[in-house]
Image (cartoon, rainbow over all chains, first blue to last red; front, side, top):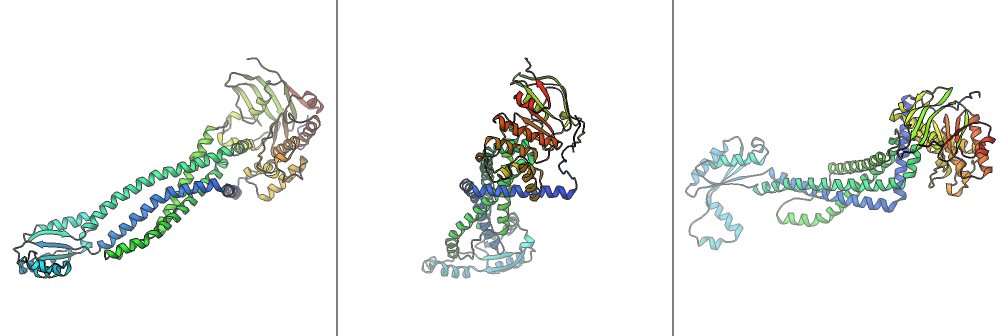
Length: 327
Length: 223
């Protein structure tokens, strides 16, 4: 038998542009195919998206809440004052001398002396207990030195503020020191705990998203087992088989993230009015803020990555379990 | 890239295949197939016809001995080279393994999509392959709308659309009536005329003898 001329070999040009063209063509196919799968399976797609959105919206809303409260502490940190309650026997002159002495320190911006008489007058005005106070006979209030520190020289942490107040307490004239931002310090401590809780909740729900996406992709693989087997037999690489599923996971994560942002924004709209009212009652100008650009990007990138990883795990497991000889 | 030599395109050297179940499918097979040759492998059920084809397609590996394609032992192929190797082979099964949610065109286009060809090239090649198997007017039909013979021809079109060097067919006419079976065999002969090496496993001795090509007869090995 005379050997015949073989059929033309498939074009296997190794030049870079050709390879790039093939790569891009296959990406387009996979993108197109994965989006069509979502579009033509709307019920399962929506169920998965809602599950992802709900799982993501809890840590996102907690994160937004914590950020808002953090902004509250930052806003107030700019004007902290320290009140030195002087001992009862300290005279007005001694109070003024102490104020001068304290003012000479580099951490101090201003000092103001509130005499015991001034303090009594103010208290009468605020409390409405003027008549009761006159029955006391003697003014029970001490002289006070109010200090506004220079924040730059003081440092930024609560510990720096504490150190400074401890130093002030060493003056023999001082009976007690009170930092007016103590409630902010407490809130900040609570927020630190809240941040940790958000991190733990976010991690747990991230695992949930991984499982949801992984399971959805696993079901999709089950439905397309025949197709995968055939494509493998006709020379598809694992990468080729994996690609549409990875895009599928990516879309689920990304669209789930978009949906969660929508849910959180709607929830915030419900909160804006009562929070602003509450803030006004406390004489504060605090306004609840929405989701900023950074948080939006964080949520979208995280959700997309979770979708991608979930899909990767599901497909890799399938490819490993159904390993074909030498493939 | 896999380098192919022309003359002896497939060689079996003392090949044995024993399945994990203990069944001995092939024992000490020595065989040389030249490039461009068309030959039939016959034998009774369980004689190892399908196993022999699967060894060439790398769906199985030999327990002993070597299978060489264009001079290269297949066991030397690296894992990442296997898909590329499979793209050089057209495999046709008794059941054509079509995807029933895709039309004829999309089924046949699959190997070209995997190769990353342009849409224009895909349309051109798929239409040419379908014309060759006589299904040029059924591109939009779905597999369930076709007869068994037509489905088999879609499988053949899919196997040849990537212009493979080697075509392997495992009982391609097993489910067809004699007239259709003859048609399918002539289709294979046409691809062979174009230069492809064609190996067909069939237990239909009459059909095989009518084609007047080399015949390899396998006998069942007792373990």
